[in-house]
Length: 348
Image (cartoon, rainbow, N blue to C red; front, side, top):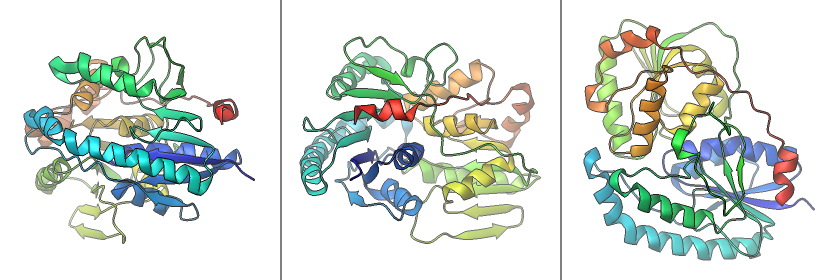
């Protein structure tokens, strides 16, 4: 019988579930049987990508963003009792799943309660350091305490100076085995004619996703060129609409999204880590608008701008004139990294 691996991404935007797709494909290719567990849009995305696999709904964390970015830490603090309750429920659910499905190993992408002492457990994260302003020391300490409960921590980045996560994914943690597995992406670069001048790639938790959607739809009404919006709203049915020079999709499957990104000259997107990995894999020109108040995205956007890869600005400051500086930046370049999955999966 194939060994069963429970793979559980966090439902916080679509990035965690999206970067689990290459891991799930690798598990299948190496004769494991992945069992997928998550909630909300993250679970729905993976159900659409892998309709043949067993999926399980986990308790939702139910954490939302504030409308104003500077209230982010306060909102997170207010949500902490709900979060702790969800993690406790998640632990109970994980124990039940291990017994019911004879699970042989766990891969948790930032789901804090998907862990067990009964089987080998992996934690996937690019945040060994969690930026939170003047409380970075505390948030980092708490996160590292959780990571140490797992047998291994897989960081989807390169080890060394040529990397994507910067200080987020490169700290000294001698107490546990960290493995750098290279940037993860579900996409492949393809040479294709440019069909769109700009792709607006929306993602991330509400209400900030919707706020940016409204702003950019209004801004790009006056754009002279072909624009495609992918809203990042995973729903049961796919919807497509066209208005003059703008084409709008509520969501795209991986193959469809890969095609559209390859066909687009410029990508406007959040500076989420999975988005950065994807656009790097496809060697794209990008403009980043970090989620207000999210220190991680603000750091990643500024870092890429300072290194000369991609311009960025705050959400409230964006206008079409900002795109004129694109030619001054070199764009993102693919980091080819061959993962030895046979060695990586030896833990199980």
